[in-house]
Length: 220
Image (cartoon, rainbow, N blue to C red; front, top):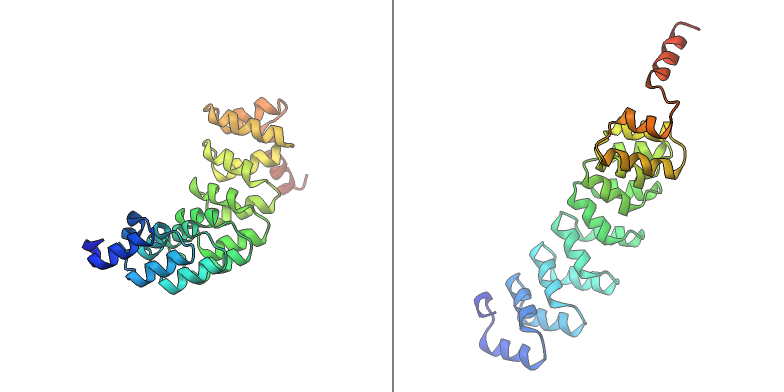
């Protein structure tokens, strides 16, 4: 703590108040004054989480505000680490979004407005952030959601090698939760899209759709 500006007297004061000096040190390392550290500790704030939030740009006032609104400071600091502002975190919290998943989605490149849009349209942010982890864009996830495909199965397909079009086609071709699960498992085993669909739907012919499209073009 001395390395980060704490005096001998301040360190003894913190010790006498039964403050964990490792946590106190983390707060001081990232810009907290002695009085700010004591103030936070007196309000029941974990000083290690406090220090992490300070590291990623949060002010003392913002941290107290988040704490007073019932926000977990570990989740708060994680979201700040990946670019979320204080007001964005409050907005997400007020809309009922789990900040652990919100922070993870931010870590994988999602913007605040994209996460809010997904949540508003009924996409579980837990599934959303996992899909972002595997490289799906916001528009791709929403396209899957808008055709009725559960994002958990969309993500399972993407995570196991399917591209966006293949994942959507699996939903169009296969009815039922069990079939979509099986498709994901088959892709996990290295089986290509057409073979995976055929294994579940023996009468599947990938050329039928092309035939129907050409037939319609010819007016037949």
